[in-house]
Structures are given as C-alpha cells and as structure tokens.
Image (tube, rainbow, N blue to C red; front, side, top):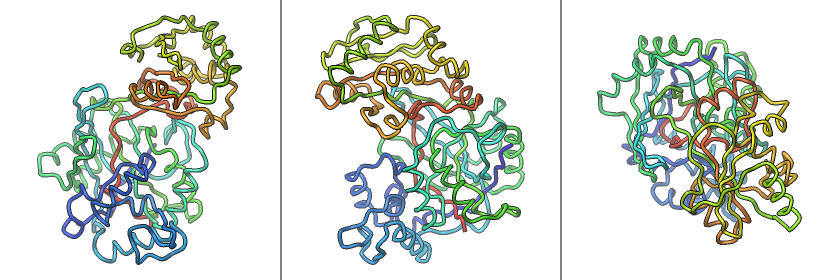
Length: 434
C-alpha cells in the first residue's frame, strides 16, 4: 500500500519574491532556451534558475553573477541555499497536505477542472499494491536529475500520480479548504489557473490516508524523477523509520475517477526515410492496414476502441486513414504481451511499423534516431509539409483505463504513449530532503 504523508513544504515568500507568476515555471523538460531566458526576465528568483541550471562561458550560473562554482549543479544548489537563507524560500513549521485545482481548457476546446493534492510518498520499488510506472525511461534524464537532487537536497518538481477512489473520499475531505481564499494562485502561459490550499488538520489528513490505504499509485508523469529519487535514497541510506526525509518524494495525486482527468495523444514523426525504408513502410501498410484517403481536417483519427486506427501523411501530402485489418495481426505481433498491451495503439504501431517495417531498435526509439513527437495535429502536419519530417502518424488518445490495465500487468508502454494535460507547475511547493 502507498505510504502517503503530509510534508513540511518549502515555498516562496511572495512578500520577498513577488507574485507566483514571476517565479513558477513549466516542467524543466519542456522549456526551450528562449523560454528559460524569458522566465528569468520575470524574476531572478524564477525556479528555472535552479531547476534548469545553465552556465555562462565565464563559469558562472547564468543570471546570478555571484555564483561562481564551476559545476552547474553545485551552483544551482548554492543558489537555492541562498534563497532559503535570504528568506525568499521559507519552510513550513508544521506538516500539511495541499489541496490543488487546475482550471483549464484542453486541446479539444473543453473547459474542465482537475482536482488533486500535494503530499510526500514513501519511495518503494515498483510492484503490485505500491507504485507502478507506465512508460519506459532513459538514463540521460535520470543522471541530470540525480546531480541536481544531490546539490539542492530537495524535490523541486512534483511527480504526477494517479490513485483509485471511486467514492471520492479523499477529495471530499479536502474540498472544504477550497471554500477559503487559496494560499497560492497563478495562471500559466496556457491559461490554466493553478490554486493550492494548505490543509494541516490531522483529522483530514487521516481521512485522506485511509482513503488511499488500499490504493496503488500509478505514475502519470515523472518516471525519471521517481527513479532518481530511488537512487538518491539508496545513496543516503537508512530505512526511513521515523520519517527520514530522503526516503520520501514529492507527489501530486489525482483520482482516476476525477472528471477533470484527461489524456490526449502524442503523434509520431519520422525522418531519415530513404527509398528502401519508404518501400518497406509502404509494403507493411499495404499488408496490415486498410487505407482510405480523407480530408486533411479529418486526418486525426476519432477517439474510440477497437483495432488500431491512425492518420498517416508523408511528403506526397495525401492524408490517409489507416485501419488495422484485424486485431489478430496485433495479437500475433505481440503474442508475448498482455491482452491490454496488445490493444495499445502505440504498442501496435511500434511493433508493426517502427520496429517491424523500419527496423528501429529500442535504442533508436530511446535516442530519437529517426523519430520525433508532436502533441498538436497541425504542428505534425506542418512539419511534414515543410520537409522537417518525412512522415507523420497521428494517434488516438490512450484511455486512462488502458494505462491502468497495462501498468497492472507489469508492463511499460512505449515513450510518449500518454499526454496528460495540463502539466503541473514547478515552484508552487518544494519538498526538502534534509
């Protein structure tokens, strides 16, 4: 069972740093150099200065001339320490859960509110009844986050995880906090309104813990950070009896049954298609799929279940809907996988076309050799039209229930199988590890 605990949060003192809009940021892995510079123009205290450290040619942490450490991670750790000393970042004296809402309009144009809460969760190995991943990870990001964690001794970004609570008992216990003005509020660049409320009441905390007592947690976003936290906890050592901080990790938990929880697709883009590979791809499509030319505006396949459907477009700019001829084709190609995985769109595409027809290896997929991703349909089409990519596969969204079922079978999906929207902000809360 998951060990969910309140946390002694670190958080910005807005009387020192100004409004949260100046110091919060999107997750580090979606920030371009130009976006990073723009965020730092808002405030020298913007979290990207620590969460995404960049060194100048003079060996100083960019935009902080007094940090002269040669290593960017050490410089980031020193800067975060100075923020705490200066009072820009304060530590809560008592532990609390933090109710959290996100009012957003999704890529589909529908307005929703997603509800969850921040806490710290005991780090455990992956397994039934505890914490489960749902996507494969890569070593590069984990090494980067580990070096930053060692330097800052804090979780800077929350891991986004899901739990089952059909009766909504956890949120019902937290909801009364939302009747008061929030302890923090910020609107991000995509128009999502993020609000947090501190919930220190012991009775409420116990109610939430009881609601999750039999739940396992499914990581929706933040696999690399979770595995990094595992490595860090092992480095520090100790069994965590008595609540050793390094044995816990910052999470935002959302119920699988929350009406505001949505998943959107991530499309696949191909490059490096020479004549031989184009021929192999065409042959595999002709063999395994029924192809139907459609209007460009109808290229993205509609949501639904059943055999794989894809939108396909290449340099000929003929939009085509591909429908798997028979589910039996997927069953044979993925015979060593679970029933849930054999109906997974990204898994079937990977087996039949990326690995099967194009001969991509796990390494190619992990290192983006000939493969790229786009979350916006029009962006994917324009990349092909402009010659940036040779072809694009437009995907259906993976249903939340299927994410759960594949994880429950102990399997990991291909990278970017899910796009949970909106993202969590970095900078609302930090979790100290020492």
